[in-house]
Image 1: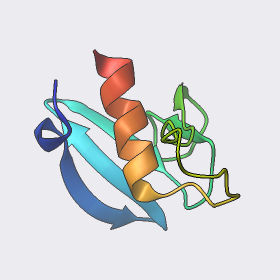
Image 2: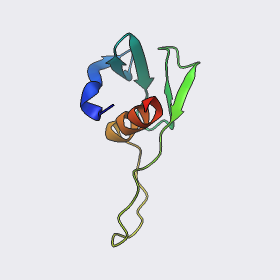
Image 3: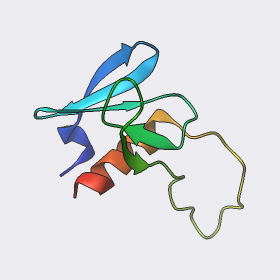
Length: 77
């Protein structure tokens, strides 16, 4: 499974959505959970920041769409 296997469907009801086969996944900006239903009641996976490189200092930043996509791919593998 690669990130390119997920198809971004755009925003539905204010939530980012991806599909992979018959499965759909939804994420709200800044949330730490991806859900498998549009209502946001069925958690699919947690969203975390990407591992940092050892030479870069830690910074506080919001979770992004790329972080959510990476979390979905990791959960599907």
